[in-house]
Image (cartoon, rainbow, N blue to C red; front, side):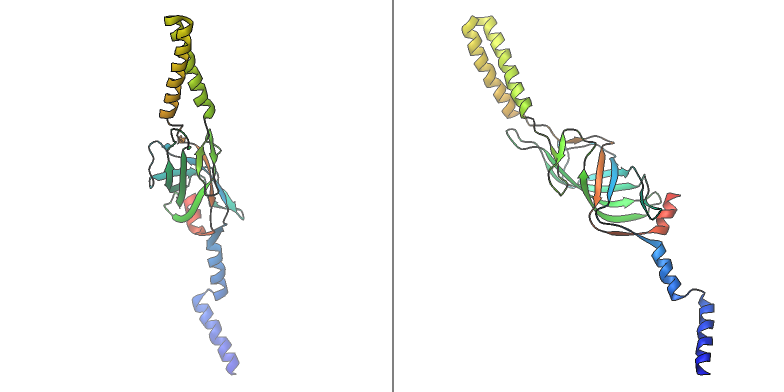
Length: 224
C-alpha cells in the first residue's frame, strides 16, 4: 500500500513538471556541441598587416570562409568573424635576420553576436607569398633574399665600371668597378630585408588549440 502511494505521488509530481531528469540531461546534451582541439578553420584576413608598421598588441580581424560541420550540424558558419591580436613583431635586419610575425586568435563572433572565446593560432599561410612557417607556435617568417643582395651589388659594380671606363679609360674602369662594388655593398648593408606583408583577403588556416564547448541553439539562431 505504501509503495503504491509513493508511485502515485511520483507520477503526479512528474505530471506537474512534464520533464523527467533524464529528458533534461538529453536536452542539455542537444544544446551543446564541442569543437575538438586541433580543428583547422580556413580564414580570410580582413585588413593588411606588415611588420613595417605593426606593433605587439595590435588587433587582427578575419572571417571564416567555409563552414565547420559536426554530426550534420553547422558549428562554425562561413562568415563568422574571428578576432585576434599580434603577439610578436620582428623587422628584418640589415645584415642578417628575417622579418617575423606571430599572431593569436582569441574569439569568434557569430552573426547574431554570440561570442565564443577560443585559443587559436596560425597553422598555415597558403595565401601568403614568399613566407614560411618558422615553428609550431605559428610564427610567420619572410623568405631569405641573399640572391637579391648579391645581384644588387653586382649591378652597382657594373654601373661603376661603365662610368669609370667612359671617363678615364681602362684604368678608370677598374677603379669604377671597385668603387661600384663598395657602393653596392654599402647599399646592401644599409638596406633592410623584405618585411612580412599580408594583404586583405590573404588565406590563413587557423588551428584551435583546445576543445571548445558551444551553445548549439545560439549557433542555429545565428545561421538563420
